[in-house]
Length: 380
Image (cartoon, rainbow, N blue to C red):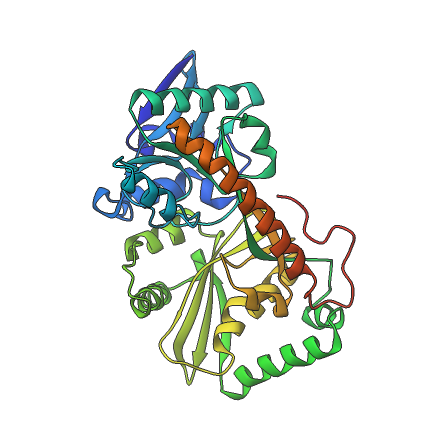
C-alpha cells in the first residue's frame, strides 16, 4: 500500500479516478474536477492549491480524495471564520488547512472515494497522519454523504447544516405537483408563474451538446454579473463553461429566459443520475417572477419530465420552502490538530448540531404541502 499526494488531478488517468465512484454525482467526475484545474478556476492566490490524496495497492488506485490546501475559507460553504479568528487571537496559524471538498460547490456527494470501507478508512488515516507531519492546523471533509459517517472516529468533530431540496413523489406534471400543495401556496405559485408569463418571458432548456456558443457566453455573462452585484470575484472561466459543454454534454443543463428574442437570464445546472443540481444564475434585467421561474419552477418541470428524484437548487434560501423545497441536513467532519482547540470546539459543535436540528424541525412545520409523507427528506 502506498500513499501519494498529487498536485494535479491529470496525474491520475480519468478511468482510474472514475472507477472509484458510481458516477451518480457529476461533481466527483474527473472531467469536472480536472477541468477546474485546467481552465484557471483554482489558483493559490485565491486560496486553492490542489493536494489530492491517493492510495495505491500494487500500482492500482484503490482510494482517493479531492483535496486542497486552503489559504482562506472562500468557496467552502461550511463556515469556520470564527475558528480562524480564535487561532489568530491565540497567536497560532489556522491557514493553511487541508480541505476535502468540491471547490465552490455545496453539494453532498462522495468525498472519500474507495472500493470498500477498509480502503476508505486507510485513506482517511493516512491523510490525518500527513496533516500532523506537515503541521497543519486542521483537516476538513465537507458535504459528505451519510454513508461515509462510519469512517470518522471520535477524534473528528461533526457539524451539520440545512439546505432545501425538492423530492419527486411521482407527479405526472407541474399541475399534479401543485395539486398536492395547500390551497394558498398553490395559488401563490400560480400567480408567480403568471407574472413571468405576462412580462413576456419564454424559457428554453438546453443540454451542453445543444447549447450554442452564444448560449454559453450569455450564461457566463449572467454568472459574472451576479458575482459583481454582490462584490465578489467570479472564479469560473468561460473556458470552463465550454469544457462542461463538451466533456459533460448531457450533464450540463442550461435554463435560458428570453424576452423579445433576446436571452435575458439563465441558470446553470448539472444533472446526475437521479438529481438536478442548480448552481449559478444571473440576469441582465430585473423582472417579475424571473428569478423564481428560472431557478426553481423550470427546474422542477425538468425533473418531472426527466423523472429525476431530487432537485438541489443550491445553498441557503428559506424562501425555497414556499416553492416545495424541504429542509435537508448536510454533514461535514473536521479534525483539529491542537487538542485544546479540539476540546473547546467539541462542545461548540454539539450545541450547533442541536440548534440546527431544532431549526430544521421548525422549518418542516412550515412546509407548503397538504401533508408530508412519513420520510419526506430521505438521507443522502
